Length: 179
Image (cartoon, rainbow, N blue to C red):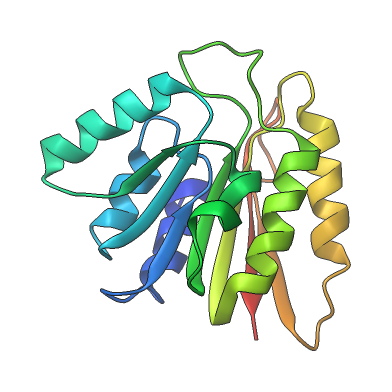
């Protein structure tokens, strides 16, 4: 059985082609960035922490891959990306093994989603892996679920993939596809 992050990669690999423009909206330790960079040469990766850029750059070098690493929040995607976007991925929460007080926030995440909603190509996908077992996580989860729930079904498909029998607050995946 696939974990939510593995499912997101599977669903992105189905649609991303070599020249597609894609976004890693929450670079973190670089695992999503390197996954995307193995599929296309047009990866834009965002994070507000210098530590994330360092870790990602190191991972990309180790794997012989390249991406545009941007030290800025995902709410500023439109300052760096002018082209239409085929796919994007978010890991909402905090950077593992780093300062847990630095978290993604509902207002910046929703702003990034609004930008991507306009830039996303037909059959393009946005993956949201939602970690919410930290302070502020429930609020962001609720905001994102409210936002995706309002997308008109005539233009968007929205699916939720999650474990149902785990204790604590396991992450889950929300997949958005533009029709």
